[in-house]
Image (cartoon, rainbow, N blue to C red; front, side):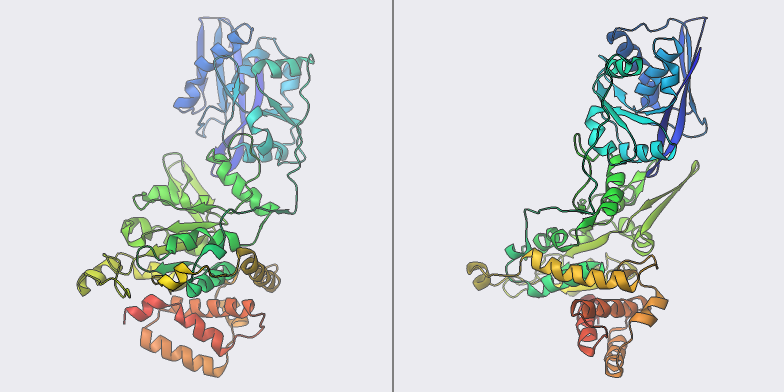
Length: 508
């Protein structure tokens, strides 16, 4: 007898339909699994056998052939345990095959029949809705994540027997609903910019970066607060909309990072990989490509501390994601694209010992060593970082006396206002921030007065700025004007923007 169960496989951040076909015939007892399964899928044979028997049902001692169609797409993971088990029970007449045909099913089975959570539930639920399935059977720990797709009936189960009882009509599983569907997803942070003593210039640069989605590089001696400031940038970014939260959750879901019992990811990601990370770890890759840190930081912050300590080849692979805001990975089996619209925040010491230009501690590095240290970060990559800001040692007086700086909520209010201005300016253009402007948008929205042109010309001539750095100054000037609530870019805005090309100045 033949039974078919609808499931899916993950390709990139999307799920694609898979039909689990189970055929049981008389003959030599054998269990074959075909359709390009990986090792984890092949191992499901033993898990399924034990789960069915321990749930109190008969496992057929016949020839079993399970086909995962289409056969030319690689199938990975333990998510096919449950559809295979239900297919076997359907093919042997122990459950109703017709009921199975209307459902979408995923889940890993323990040997006793308990259901375990699987990654990729959100994109799988979206696929089930697209395919117009009547319901989606998921492991109980994945219920909140699956319920984000509001038009789909979610049936969470703890054990294989729960699903069999549901399909047989003995004990129906009540469809699960959760109230995640709000316009905005508020999040309350435990850290705040008010805790940062001094560093007014760095905080101003962070505000500009957050307002225009600009990349930021902080340069200063050890202990000056670079990491502390970077960790608080997320507290001044606009609150996630529901649509943005879904995008983030989708990426985290396929990596199994949502967590049991959780649903929507409610905060912007903050990713801080160690400097020993590989290129594949940073931008994604592998035999079956998975997202890297640049995609896990999508719509959030990617923080690279001790920037020159990263391998040069690792840093260089970030060029395309920084420009295109997506990562394309090509393999013999096909090409996958992952989103990577992140805000890059970097920190580095001014020299190998860390104290070049410090007001207290003397630098022990020679000029060639300093130059070599800074050249570990290529010019093209630095060009893609909009703002370079100095973060000097905090004087003792500022550390000793508690200063009442601005809280994150006050800064965030200004950032929100600037974002609203940009949303109206770029409505319908597929652009959401000043940092994404192209040549056409710069010409249209970044007109500056003649005296600002004269100032910018002197800066370009004296600093030897590249065309990309020249455009960066226009974009930063536009953001500064937006923070001031000004329709026009003034000379003061351009002058401040030029100040944020610190490395261009220091290299002269």
